[in-house]
Image 1 (cartoon, rainbow, N blue to C red):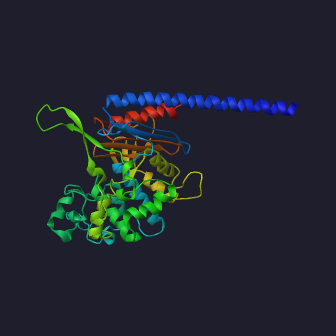
Image 2: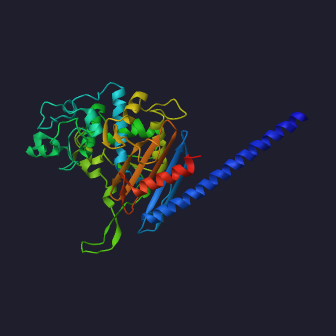
Image 3: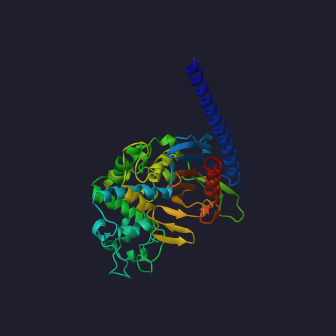
Length: 397
């Protein structure tokens, strides 16, 4: 009899603790919604999706605002955004998978891999390495664009010289999208698979994500419309409006059908910025990097711990308190008192961010499909304000 009473007593305590926990979570979610709505109003944001990870689990995932202004539809948690430059980490993860299998080395000469001579003509004896492209230290630039490898190929004309800066490769940092589209082409050459399909098989499917670099492999009804915030016309004093950017989700089927060349046509998938994914699924992907290459709670490993740590390790200082590794940057300015690792994205009016603190086991994802962009300390204010708000509500005790 006493035993039964003791059991009931402990069950009552557990039920009370669970009720308190649920009540606390509900309060935090209400506070988060109020704070996010305030930030969205202050930044004229169209829509926003967020996710918070703690100890390997998503503890908050929510969406606000309009998916499409013209249709008046609202964003759902499973809707997909083109996330821009956070995509670089997917490309690098796929590349690290190949490195773990001995297919490529960080100090390898890119000219051996891409199929044409890649050299800064001012420093012809300095090899351009894979690591240089990954860390934006190759001295390559985007002055001629980056959606076609012809611009950097000396076999296609003398114009390639404009793609190179005056300084010696490996000595300075300049953000370069052309370098990552080149890396995508190298992935195809080494894997023998089309870039989007290789990333799907190696990264997306093992993590159970609904995501792709190829719009035609996704449900187009899930795409969140992106909007640039710009003047209504070119006349002085024109009001600022949101302009839809349909080119964010253009099909490449016709170009592929016309004649896709593996290892050269790759930029059409934009390895530098073309991933489409939801905030929740991006958070699931982030947990793998927080867990140094392994999917939490499983034995499945996407990349080795060594490769994951290399991606997160600083290679070059970009500004005081800011460094860049390999497709992941490190910042002391995003959350005061925290060293955060991750990446931002901006294209077609979208602003996204994925940042985490692996030692402390938390991370935050946000993406907006349009806002009034104001920059401070290297971030658009909506990025830093949303992340700080979610950090204060869900992470700080």
